Amino acid sequence: MREARLRELVWQAGRILDRLGLVDYLGHTSARIPGTDRVIVKPKHSPKIRGMASLRPDDLVVVDLDGNLADGEHRPPAEVFIHTEIYRARPDVTAIVHTHQPAATTAGVLGVPILPTLHVPATFVPADPPTWPCPLLVDNPARGRELAEHLGDQRFCHLQGHGIVSVAGDVREAVVGAAMLEQLAEVALRAEQTGRTPRVITDAEIAVLRGQLAGVDGRWAYYLDLANSAISSSV
Image 1: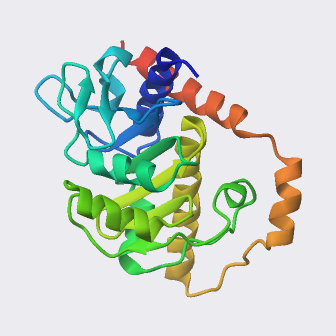
Image 2: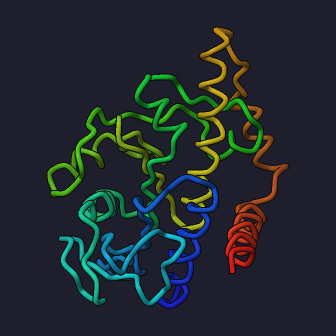
Image 3: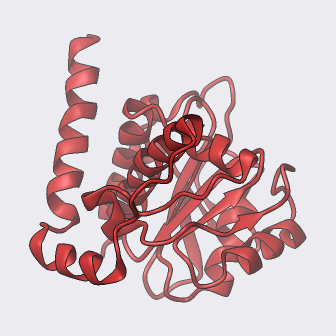
């Protein structure tokens, strides 16, 4: 995939995450440039760079796997090592989302399992994500490596008291995965309040659902339309 298209996807990802209430002025999405050790990522919050919804593709920066700026006029985010160290540990990952989304973060703080209880989200999040028990900023490579170790070969991980990461082989999958995780976290927290045990969708049922449901394209198009509509109504 060409770098221009990746920039567009990372930019669109920010708008969608903002529209869904999964980020505020903090949080970031990244994409690995194919065939390189370079990463496109949202820059550091600054007087010019505000929320993710206001970014443009040209505002995004490119870093190497050491977190050094390779292209762009802005500084990388302080937590660039979330991205670089996961990419270093996981050659299969080409997109990463880090958010402070409320329900999933709360579930991580409380240790409430996020289980596959809803039919569509279950196909994205079939098991409770692992937890890295650390609320600190991932502002150095050592913490990035610790996070990557706790993530392991999974698609999601709690940064306990901090947020979550969602990783995938495609920007759209990483973003939609974060949205699906939030839906399941909301169910988990409501179930915890009732004291009742939710019915969990089985692995066999998830396998059937994956053959029945459309892929990520439709979800991405829907979320992008929501984001575009929100921006259009505000101007």
